[in-house]
Length: 298
Image (tube, rainbow, N blue to C red):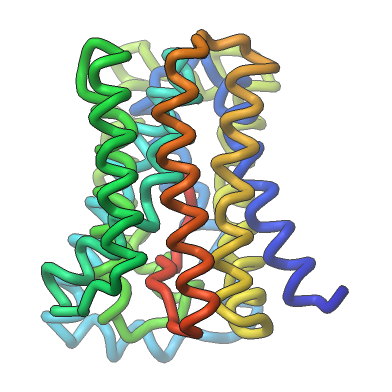
């Protein structure tokens, strides 16, 4: 097994195990976890770039307004995606978050058609209709629109759409995005400390350590993904990407015992069938899929 496949497996396995990590921080408000994730991710990636002596690109990017705007919007979308994911995991909606990342590739196709004028093949159209039927069925079964899943899918797909036209590689772009959110994150965390609501240093050494490690835990899968993307075909990455939501689904049902009645299985099955059709069509046609360069729920 080559290094690219191992790197891809490592990235998606780590992303799949994210619910367990965020559950360990369940006593910390989701917005504080998000703030620490942004701050420590920037410090970790900045350290890597410093070791690589990779700094000259930043001066050029800071002079490009359009590029800065793209990455600012990407940072806002990524922050929103992360916040919804962390909150949902700790509120007991892990299964629904997994649904969001199962739907995500099909939302990529939809946005490609709308914004990039890509043509929809018959199999892709059939997969989209099937997934839509699954979401509609789950809406009736839940008694509400599965807004967590849809918010995660559309925010991450839109993030991927922006990154499709962005010029920087994964590590540089991620450092710039966290740089954009660094000041708001630090300001919010400082305010929480001043008013006595901060968790850092006040909920025991384990919680404090986990908040600090949120930086490398977030960044390492991204780096592994970057290695995989350069070494293996996108079609293989397309298959590997389903490993993360599958693990999240299993963790939600079998480890945290979230409710998953048999009636809900039909809706998920329609979406899984849609993904199977979509994936097989992509492989057979040898067409590249839109694979966002970024991290899950992230």
